[in-house]
Amino acid sequence: DAGVIQSPRHEVTEMGQEVTLRCKPISGHDYLFWYRQTMMRGLELLIYFNNNVPIDDSGMPEDRFSAKMPNASFSTLKIQPSEPRDSAVYFCASSRRQVVDEQFFGPGTRLTVL
Amino acid sequence: AQSVTQLGSHVSVSEGALVLLRCNYSSSVPPYLFWYVQYPNQGLQLLLKYTSAATLVKGINDFEAEFKKSETSFHLTKPSAHMSDAAEYFCAVIAAGTGFQKLVFGTGTRLLVSP
Image 1 (cartoon, chains in turn cyan, brown):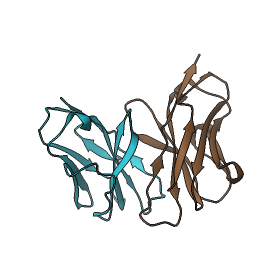
Image 2 (image 1 turned 180 degrees about the vertical axis):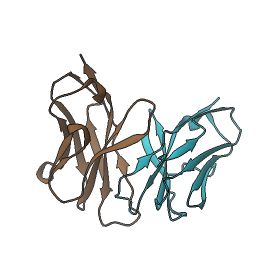
Image 3 (image 1 turned 60 degrees about the vertical axis):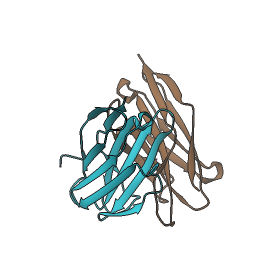
Image 4 (image 1 turned 180 degrees about the horizontal axis):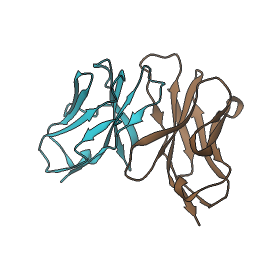
């Protein structure tokens, strides 16, 4: 298996623009997680899905952030409009059957908002 | 709410020396505990996890951790450091038996290995 795939790997955009991050989880995994990593706040869970259904979005910072999982093999995290404070590395991860199962992380998307 | 505290944002060791990375947890219910490693410019990778079976847990690359309920600790050790162990290490906890389970990470400890 190719592992969790994220695109793009790097994104540089200007404040106010829409940003869409993409994730393909490992085939057969029921859970998908979106995390954000910054120096100031560390690694934060933004939202997670079980069988394509959002379960906990309490970590989503504000209404500018939205996430979807239209099918078992694809998820997006959208920021509209983007702000400089959104600059971070965004990770997608997936796990097989339970939250306590090993989470497999993608390589991350480094987002810079100017 | 459950949480973990990692003592020391940076730990420096010499190659061949013992590695000890400290993690204390806070949880009102029996926890599941994890250690993940992050190499530069990569995602996190699971080293080992404790799920209430044996208190001494062995992981990949000769790492191990011991769950000590009396000390609320789950420290990570390795007998002999290699240069390739230089990375950031994260302790994490899930509270067992609660709804909307999610992994809560510590702030990380960067391990530096010198020749």
